[in-house]
Image 1 (cartoon, rainbow, N blue to C red):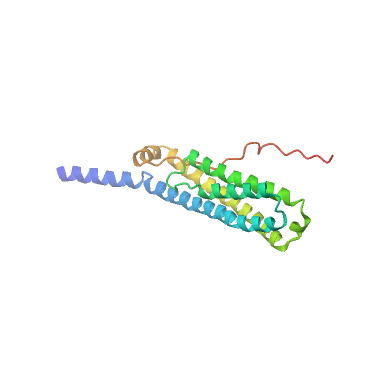
Image 2 (cartoon, helix red, strand yellow; image 1 turned 45 degrees about the vertical axis):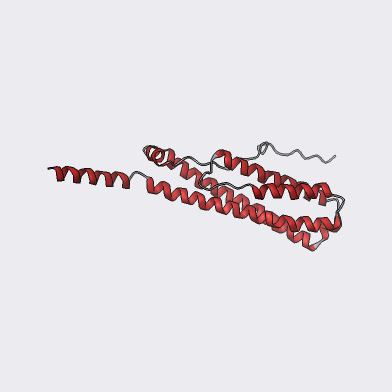
Length: 193
């Protein structure tokens, strides 16, 4: 009788642990980490383009030193900001996003500054770098969307009952997503005065 009782408990434990969602959560967690690596890869590609872009502009617009330094400093801050893939909390993703947005803004100011220098705009190296930068920005957008979709799937699994019980026991926590920039919901004002 004791053997039968022990066998029933062991069988129940195996069935419960097999269907508890643990393996699903592990798979989805690994998927999120993989998507995060792709996000970092896209941002690194942009960071790698920045020195070449700055050097191309520096030769023709040396008196724009402040703008160039701002880009270099923003790149340094953005590349020094790392996030542990096992701790993709709302706060850590927001901090990473903030450092990357600072680089985006300084690059935007640099590209606006270049508009005053037709010889830079005509430079073949600059045009090639600008095209690569535009392509990289598109890749970043795609990778961020893919990451957010993976996080949404993971967070739904972790928060859904009875998975939330297993998630709490094994330490699976919800992960952070990329958010829109403040003011992104408002269209820019265009004036032709």
